[in-house]
Figure 1 (cartoon, rainbow, N blue to C red):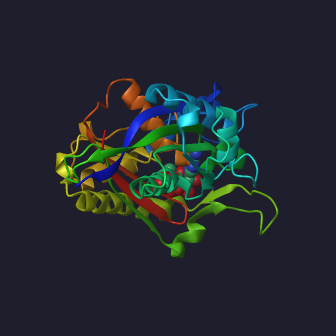
Figure 2: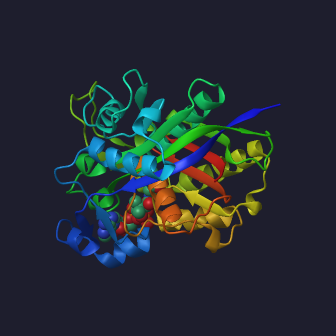
Figure 3: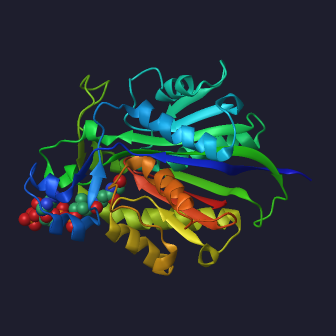
Length: 325
Ligand code: UT7
């Protein structure tokens, strides 16, 4: 019996040209390279100047279409995970579709799940593909977090960066086993009891502003390793694979100490854990697709590799996915 899976047939990433190093940050707030490096693993972050979210998304998507060797006309769905859209409405995904030149009528929407946004978006697109509703989907994670950063708050402003990553998913017929190519499982979670630990200080319906990111770092840190490990383990269980058999763990890039902690909790050797936080910082929904595309591009992640994605962020939201590339 045929079994539909979503296969990643293309990948793309893009970051703005302007880079702020830790030394640059020390000129903005009372901080230093040593603190930022040892506490977070971050060395620099990219920030937008003139560009907006749909520009970053467009460039990442363009590369994803190119590596997939398909045209924008072949896309049947766009899902864009972000908390920093161009406008409150319409969805930035629709602007990206217009810039790419997708067919009129192609559904496109934004999805808000903070740092777990890409795993949530992948889940939505994968389910629509497996239901036979669409054949080819563009899934993007993109953020201009510099626009919701309080540049006077050293607790948060050193952490975040701007960027975008994208994948093209396409329906393929597989056997329905854990040896298949494509997305083997997804699992998403949320818990509103942690709503206030990481949020913006405002929003459309409350303050008629976007507000700035505020975080109780310690509370988020305490929960992060457990959430990331749980999402990875449950996604592995659904896929019918053992965590120890994966080639790569690709965790959300928020803090090197969290990344190391989740690798240890899952008893994975360091070499299997993807880390690219140093040049980017925390790019929220962009973090996982940006790292995935960079590591496929530089040859680290190869066709056939078994990967677990795991993410956690504001809400709290968290989620995992198992993919055989
Ligand atoms: O993306 C969603 C998920 N987000 C996360 O996973 C983030 C989770 N949290 C974290 O990564 C960490 O909690 C932080 C990196 C945000 C903070 O690290 P920490 O080890 O928890 O530091 P802390 O908040 O306990 O602060 C320690 C000290 C404080 O000084 P005092 O009160 O001990 O004198 C802070 O004021 O470090 C100080 N501090 C800084 N010093 C220099 C805080 N930020 C800075 C800074 N530069 N940028």
